[in-house]
Length: 553
View 1 (tube, rainbow, N blue to C red):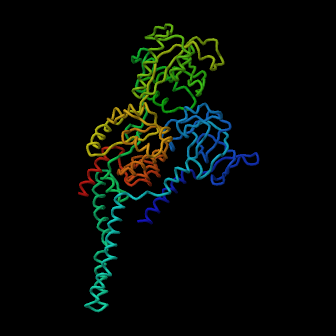
View 2: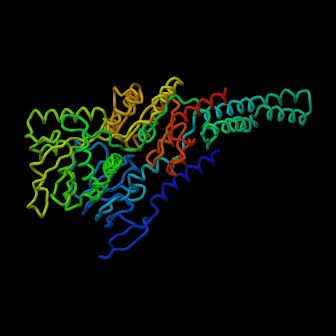
View 3: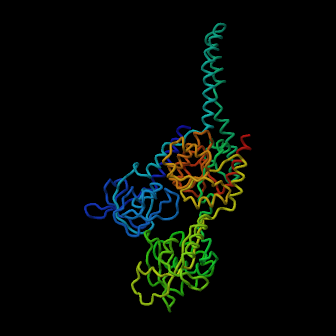
């Protein structure tokens, strides 16, 4: 068993290394050359382009529209913009992954290009620290320790009784007879068949659980699976559909308005930069509302790309008779450039009362967990030929669009049943607090208190344990912070299960009593898990727990 555990741990570590086993382009002697990642050293200048894997922890020196996908580390699906001069203050920095001047090993370039300097390599990188938590191997479960303690107790009895039996029999019988009888007693007491009996019983349970769409990779985990009293799970894909959807398109008074969706669609469809989840959601919803005709009716004239200082993106489109500038972006930034509002086709000056009402509508939508973006436009741009940021002024506010990653329909009932079965559900996610609160409220998880990763980082283990007694939701967590919470829950005497499917979940899967993944998960998660669900649904998990309890009892 020791060999088996060590073999699995090493195999998991090798899987992690394979994810970054590629070449990188670096500057050597003034020339761009391709070299294996293992040959990269501190101080090397790395050239990045769309599709590149980040070969080490890098400091951005020069960047042009550089967007990096960090979902492998943070779980967040949105690409992150990286720049040479940081736009984030220390107060806004929640975790190391938020740094906008650092590219982390194991992530990948979505779009843009950059020139970066190597600051960390191999095991000293942030990714390497995550890998280290896996190579240490999975700790023994309470079931394994219980079996070992029984075996040790019986062996102690054997070591004590065998010489006593030999001495007592040696008085009346020959030494050979006494020794033979003592050895027979030792064999009877020694738990030789215990592993066979356990394997047989657990194998029977594994076969039954497979019929419930629950595949057991490690037989010993069956006991922990059924004895589990805390289930830690990520939000995205487990509690939610893992798909951002455009849920609302509202005018300035909060009423549904298709004109707002139309202008948002023109902006998202014709912009040529990075099309993120938001743009894809806008386009998808617009096509559902039969707006395909606008793709041929309008043509792109120019574009003012998005940047994080103004937090807006504009396109200039033409229908053949007039040019129209359409801008979408953060509510505050859009309000700054608007002097008029459009309500049901009537344009009027924007007032303080209207602005306050707009901010209140946006705030209410945020409380519902929606990410809110405002949309505005203007038509008086006849004489403009070279468009720039300076043209984003004197605009007409149209309304808002709100996005949500909706909860699964089955999540609420599954969580209720898990609670009735004595299993407490704790959400560990890299997402923000407002969206997580909304989802948790909808699926029946108490969101009265939410703790962030930055708060966890400043607390001692004892203080975190106190928080864990009354907190079910932890947000903006790094993979290492997730693993720490799982470890602390175990030290408090709980049997902890962890459900995850990403690279960032691997440390927690390893640290938990029973790691649970799904068949669509990344390889490293499936390797680190003890149990694989054939459906990413908490009901399947509940069926597996119920079947295990039937088998054991």
